Image (cartoon, rainbow, N blue to C red; front, side, top):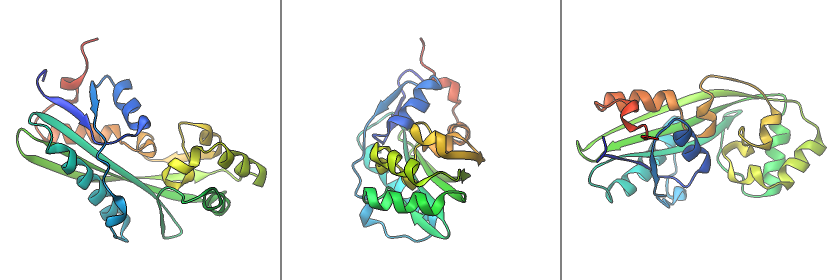
Length: 199
């Protein structure tokens, strides 16, 4: 697999860290796709469409690569939440979600530019939020961390203190289900170990 690149169509440091920690040598190429042009109200179809759009934009730049696009949203009380629009929006969301549970949807699109094949899948993880105080919410939002995250929390950062438990794939909450990625790579005829770096 030395001549087949693994490309991440995202600027997400969390996704890149997941891949590199798993031993995958990854090239990052953000798609800069305008997500506002996609207006879909069904969460699984939304994240799959966004993931596929991002991957397709980047895949055209590579002749021999597996290109991965991802997108995540949190669904709470039937409403889809991407990244908060403002600190006030983040505070309102966290107030509403504390002591409750939301569903984190992540769409995954993997394109093989050699075989001209693409696979698109969604994985859902239930996230249970702790019953945190008003001050803790205000202090957390003041750090700026939740403003860049779907659902207004980062489980791999300061927000980890506010997640009581999860039910399902834990890396999915970070924006990339590694077990699902292994399945997708296998479905394309490869093995995830083919992409482990030699170090």
